[in-house]
Picture 1 (tube, one colour):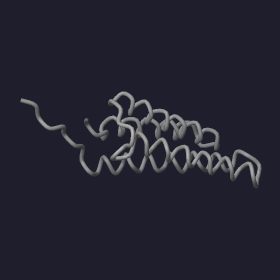
Picture 2: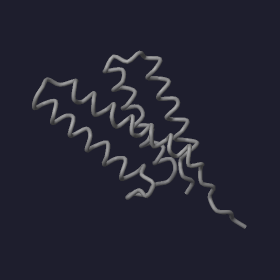
Picture 3: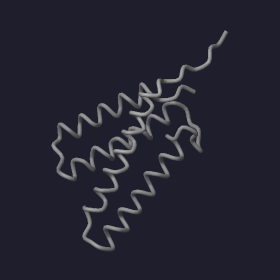
Length: 116
């Protein structure tokens, strides 16, 4: 007898979504301030914003377009988190805060990932 996959609590899913949103904002902000204004920064900011939204919609959304196994989803999520941690370090955030965000986001991604 097989049981239905257990869904994580709504609170954990919300916190995971908040970590994804923070990663999106940090990566976009880094792309805006890293290049000189106006055109290179605006193009880089818009490009990174679209890239992160596309990766999230394809693999990490509640109803992803491309369904992969749990390891593929975890890989994409870890790449998103690593990009956010790198962007935080590029923005001058203290390394301990960036590492703390990365660890919390990775643990939430593991615990609150939907079981398929």
